[in-house]
Image (cartoon, rainbow, N blue to C red; front, side):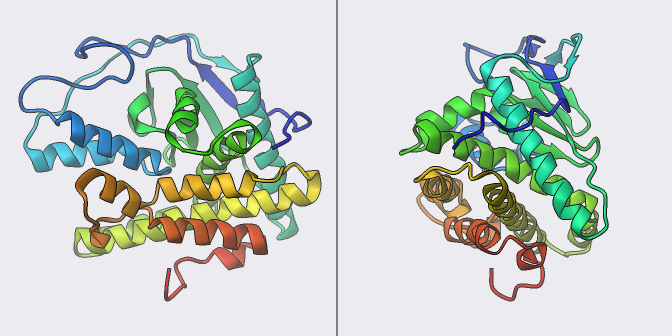
Length: 307
């Protein structure tokens, strides 16, 4: 992936020096709550992986699991900071600003072609923990989009996890996998602007049961994958930024974060009614549809009889 000539976005809030949270955790690295009554480490790892499956606010998943398991929610102590706004100067911040800037240019052109105005999201970088419009975010949640404040939340340590967890993610191809993550979250913002997210939420509230609500969520997430493919399609036409192997790396990432892959890894079996993001095959297919066709109309997962 060649991104050096991408325009850098200044719609970034850099809070990586905030220090995140303190207290209530043992050891270093990703904070894992300890003590009786809380979630087990294995459950939290699974929830974190599902959070890493992109898009849904994982605090909802974690909170729901606490209710099911009977545990009391754990507390974080947030320390506010003077947040910097604008384009970061460090290499990782520059990469994020470049990808975000490219999504802004791409979606502005797509919206303008249909007579609409694209209003870009803010992207908040943080380290450890961060308070936002959808509650408290922490590293283990992975990147997510919050429709309440129209922000993408990203702890860039997630990029290191992609490099170490997903086989074959190296060099340029790994950069494109990381860009795909950002583009997926931007896809949720596009859904919000088009009114898809509010309609999906209303449909979930009247769905009747968790399995039916999950099926709606899967369509939301697969459409965001498809929108990420649209971004790659249009950007490739304008910039010729892709290197051999980039698309394959993104498809490998999509496979690694499919619900069936995560469930099989965690419990040894697959429960389709519990899917919230789609299977590995579905995620690959819908990203590919967006990339190959490059049209919003091609990404209507809600009208598709078969996902």
